[in-house]
Structure formats: C-alpha cells, structure tokens
Length: 139
Image 1 (cartoon, rainbow, N blue to C red):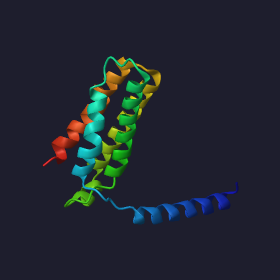
Image 2: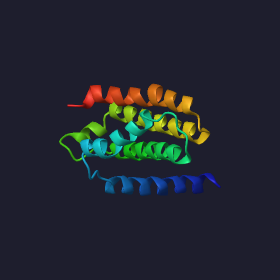
Image 3: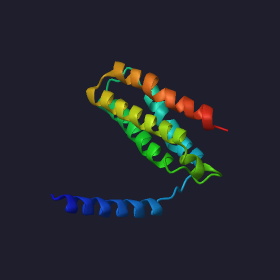
Image 4: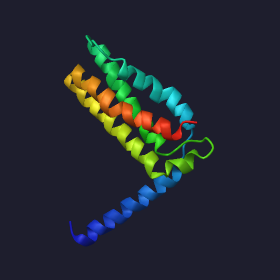
C-alpha cells in the first residue's frame, strides 16, 4: 500500500471513529453498571474455587467477559451527575484499563483450567483496581 493510500485510509478510519464516538453516550449510571454487571460478575470470579465441571468454568469465563463489557461501558462514564466528566479523568481511565487487563487474565486462567492462576488473578490483578477505584470515586 502506498503512503498516500495508507494516509487516506487512516483519515477515513479516524473520521468514522470520531463519528461513532459522538454517537456513543452512556444509558446507565455507573451505579447501575456496577450493581447489575460488575458486582455479580466479580463475586462469581472471587468465589470460584474447587471448580469441577465444565459448566462451573464457563460461568467464571462468562463473568470475566461481563467484566470486560462493563469496563468498556464505564469508559464512557454514566448518566449520573458528573459521571461523564469523571470518565474523562486519566485516573478513571487507568482503573478501567487495569480492570480490563485483569478480566483478560482471568479468561486466560479459565482457558487453561488453572484454578491457582484464577485465584491469583482475582486477588492480585482484579481486586486492586476495584478497591482503588472505590477509594477514589465511591461516594
């Protein structure tokens, strides 16, 4: 691909991305996302031990996938007062990136059916950004 075509392709992608970003707006408050998605999913992950069946492993995998989806939603902020502005803060974005990374690590542990790694990811990777975010933002 020539440099000119490449630059043109990038310009088109940036234009499409900017248009999509303008159309994206949160439809839930942060509290609704936390109570409906994050808390049940993280409780499933943190409560996972002595997994014996494929169904149990799948439940934990689905929980990690829900956390990933919720973290993506939380990057937009929420409909609550000041939540859109907070979503623009570097600290908020950092916690969300850490949440995403931790949930991805949980999925790796699930794929390997490695309960020790699952426990370690839950405690050492997932818990810290959750707790830190609560300390900084929970009212």
